[in-house]
Amino acid sequence: MPIMKPLYPPQQLRFLLALHARKELSSDHLHHLQAMKKGADGEIRWTTLLSELPDDIPILYDLNLEINQSIIQLDALCILQNKIVIFEIKNFSGNYTLVGDQWLSPSKKEMKSPLIQIKRNEPLIHQFLKRYQLPIPFEYHLIFVNPKFILYGAKPNESIIFPGQIPQYLDSLKKQTISPTLLHTKIIETLLNNHKNKLNMLVKPEYHYEELAKGVFCSKCCGRMERLSKKRFKCKKCSHSGFVNDIILNNIKDYSILFPERKIKTLDMYEWIGKQVSTAIIHRILQKNAKRLGNGRATYYELINSYF
Image (cartoon, rainbow, N blue to C red; front, side, top):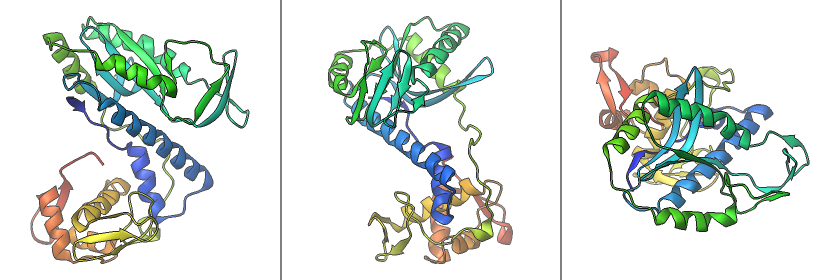
């Protein structure tokens, strides 16, 4: 299917993972990181499920739209022939309980209903479509993707799709066909043009370059990686492995997101990765994946891909 906007790791999550690899986080920040990672895993699971849809259905992931000075975040969106379908993804696990309108977590603590965000966003989306003259209706679904999730006391609700209902729901989407029109093109262009690439960090612990551990770190578990061979690195903690170029580039991206105000220079990156590869290799990686600026000792690089 045409993925009009792919799913990238949330900037806040990418930032916390990069920091967690190099510095011990407080319990609050660590809890926030774990919650964000679980949510991101749920979104990845949903992208895998949507990959089964017909090739002609446009899909956009992780949209941030500003409407009347309010930012709304849409996890995923499909454009069908005569409607837009929006998905709010939740990766809850365990036994939850619904008493009236009140949701109780597995520990029986009261929690905010996930439907509140949908109810808040719906009128804003109506305003957005009207403002940009996009005459098309939309559906908004709350998707629980984790098969270990149970909600006791739930009544039939067209907005909610539980894990056991997902196969049947996907089957209904697979039957959809689309003949692209000028309206479809306008919808896609309007959504992409109004997407806000980066939101302000909600959580940003204090840190300094000097206190952060230097070396090569794993993007999967934040563990230290060691040189396995001339071409590969391997994580000491989870055994994840990857090609030298990919692993080093990922660690350079960590530097960029942790220190966006600093210039990326070959010798600085050599120190950042704990001198695990030569400056020649780092130079080659930067030449291929970044734009070179300046001359001589003042040479620095800007990463070509702004998504992390």
